[in-house]
Length: 330
Image 1 (cartoon, rainbow, N blue to C red):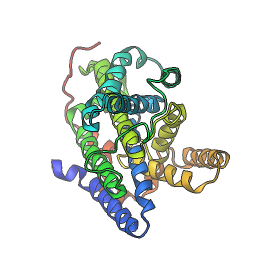
Image 2: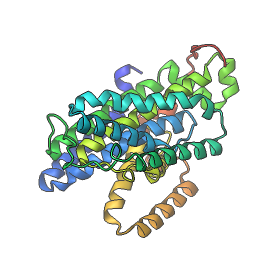
Image 3: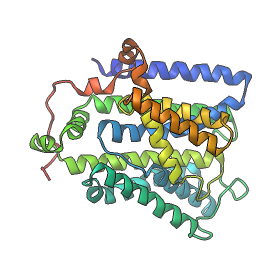
Image 4: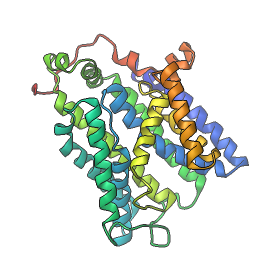
């Protein structure tokens, strides 16, 4: 399979969906705002799908890392008057660096303990933002959060920019999983000890993946701050981390398009369902049904030929190519 055909199916389906939404938005402009929100959630869910679905490591800290990215750009652009493009790199690098530093000790934990620790990270970040005083208070358009350059307040431009990044992320996801390092990641998910015996540096690979996941969450937070124009300590909270995990599980954690489908269903259902109680009942009910009848997510319900067209990453990474050692065994 050539590098082009690896991601052709996934990207083709995604671009067709984006084109359909764009046409619909010409008749109903509010569709662009909803589409942008789905795209931002997809930026949070896709890397978690890679970490959990392909690496076998669960995280409930996506909301915390997104909050770090959002507040980093909000502080830089409002306190120092710099351009959002200037704050993009710090908004991505800072959460990635924090994640890499804490990754090695926490990623050794069992899955349940790891989930609780990452949930605690979200709690620490949320409390820190709440107690940060003027530095980490609420930011909005009045306080000076600037819109994205070349985008401004145009909803259709924001729609195109966010989804262009999502498409690029899908391409990177599929190419990564079909590479030697991606196959090493699947070996880690299958059996840590076997992966170590094959020469894979399990601790380093998982730490780097955890950092990449956090950095992309920071990118989602950067988009959130500059497209919505509002950031508060409770806007990117622990609940968001749980919702992102729900999106991944709902759509399919082992499929590249699964987290995007989960993000779309979650956003649309949140818009149409009145009140948090009815939303909780709906999401809880649908999660139970999915886990009972389709444990690997809704993507497994798609006919096989369409799943093959959308490039099942599990199949790509199951090729019998040898795994190249990525460092010393730890």
